[in-house]
Image (cartoon, rainbow, N blue to C red; front, side):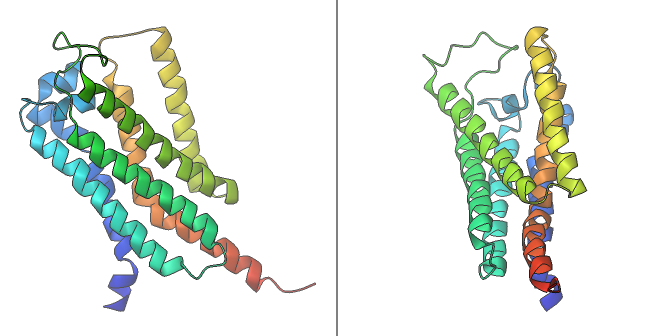
Length: 218
């Protein structure tokens, strides 16, 4: 029982990551949006099964907040408590931003409809701002952990994944295409993997502290 509780943060983070990566369902439930627009179009008003995609984002975010609470209880007495607190706070802010983003869906699906600009559609502005802000907080958490565990292969691979996405985004900006949602799907998948790895990443900060404390004196 104790072993199960000890690893509950890992189980919940994996579930949160899987729920966050809901875009593959779109090719089955809403292929029109999946093939011609961005993933946020699944949550747009009047789209089929939009409630499902909104729910997966919200439940995923709530699970992530619970994970952060469990990790805080586990490592709150660590000597690296300040660093851990900053990381967990960034993940909670990501989750909060994602919830607000999901609760303010688009009223119109770009590439499929003629949509008003954000100056006229304030929900579009709120949706975009919180979506971008949430992503920044998730990436910030990764950077903080990586700065303290630069030789950890998993973290290096994750950071490289984000760099690749940045390069792809730049290429797409220079060569715009109507069907470029695959890069966003890649990004969502990358974020989902990182969400699932958060307990591991936080444990690495604590393990680093333990290794220093257990190192024999010269």
